[in-house]
Structure formats: C-alpha cells, structure tokens
Image (tube, rainbow, N blue to C red; front, top):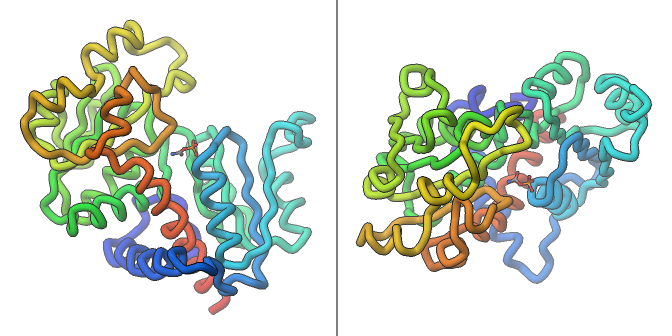
Length: 305
Ligand code: CP
C-alpha cells in the first residue's frame, strides 16, 4: 500500500498491522519523552481545503512525535483563491522537497485524483462524503481497547449516514474486522444501497438500535453538505434521534458511546451522555495520535524500500 486513501482498499491484516504499530506508539506517548526520531529526515505537508480541529492537530502532533518536519497549508489565505488548481498547488509544494502529503478536501475522490498525478504517499484526512480512513481506524482501535475485541461486536452507527465519510469508513473497517453493523437514522439520511451493497442492518428506530448495540457511534448532522435540509428541524431531529440520559437509562444496559466530533451538544447527544462514564469520546481523540503515527510510519517505510 503506497497511499492511505480509504479503508475500502485495505485488507484485514493491514488494519491489524496499523493497530499493532499504534499500540507500540501509544506506549511511547505515555513516556516523559514522547518523541522518537523515526521520521527525522521526512518532511510532511498537511494540506487542508476544509476546516478541521481534531484531524489537523492530531496529524501535526503525530508527525512531530515521529520527528518529522511539518508544513501546514490552508486553502483560505492561499493562492487557491486566485484560481490555482489542486495539482498545481500540491506540485508547487512538492517541488520544495516534501516527502508525504496529508490532505482534507470537500470533494469526494480528491486524494484519489491527486494520487494519479504525484509520486509521494498521500494520507486522506477526509474527502467529501466518501472516506475518513484514519477516523475509522482510531474508532475501531478505541473499541478494541475498550472491549478487548471487535469480532462479533454489535456496533450502531447513528444519525446522518448519507453525508458522513466517518460512517462509510467505519462500515468498511468494522465489517473487515468481523463486527456486526447497524445504521440508524431518519430514512432521508440513510442511502438505500447500504444494506445490499455493504451488508449492514438498517433501522429507523434509535431505541431498537441502542437496545441491540454494544457500541453507539453517534454522528453529527452535516448541514453544510445538504443543499436542502433533509430533516425538518434540529429540534425535531433531537426529539426523534437524540441520545440523552433518559433514553440510555431506560435501556437498562451497558453501552459505549462514541462520537468523532465536533459534537452538536443537545442535538445528536446531550451533554450528560457525552460527558458520562459511557463515553469514550476523548479516548478516541487521544488514540488518534498513535494511530496516525502508525499510518505515517508504515507508509513512510514502504516509500523507502
Ligand atoms: N473527527 C474529525 O474529523 O474532526 P475535525 O473535523 O475537527 O478534524
């Protein structure tokens, strides 16, 4: 594997190798000196054409912990606003002797397109509504850490499945690792092909999904990707699909709550659930650094062979 464009391209053993490597890096991150010189002579550019808090900081921190030199590029404030193309932008950056590219873009397929035109490894940090591979890897890594295994576990992915790259990458990843996956949300936010094409269960009943699940990975409604809103209002969404303490307590069972962030508090999750003992949301963020260190390390190693 030269690039990390999506989970769809990976084999189960690739994912397990990333997890094993991430576990080793997580141990490094617990030490007083959290840095290793593994990528000391490597320069990595983080090219973000879309906003980010977690992914961007996590990649930059992962790169710095590996001893790499990092450059950060945002489309806003760059010559993209003067009409420069994606390929010209990246080729100009690469001509300054950059070794790897981390890229987020609002267009699905943008990193795959770029991979055909440049010769260095690309890590997809989220492309449109397509994939967010490192998020799925850190999510699955966090489930395994919490529950000890993924094979046979029941995972509900809740909310705006239609516009979520996190949902698609999670489905690929969890199915490859042997989990059972149910997607739950309003019918207008669940693509029809999912059940037949990807082998997930579909339900429109949040209580039924949570009653079944060991883990609920709760997603944000991505209004920025909806030309016309596909649900009547956030208030009504919250009443029908929001997960709050009262709903969780009524289930009378243990369940792990996850969220990739950013959370719309009071919409898909109430604060008393997001901040409760059920939640591993900040563990996901912590694990993201080790998982991204692993992905960067493994791709850089392939490059130098
Ligand atoms: N989970 C995630 O991708 O968050 P950001 O958009 O803040 O990077």
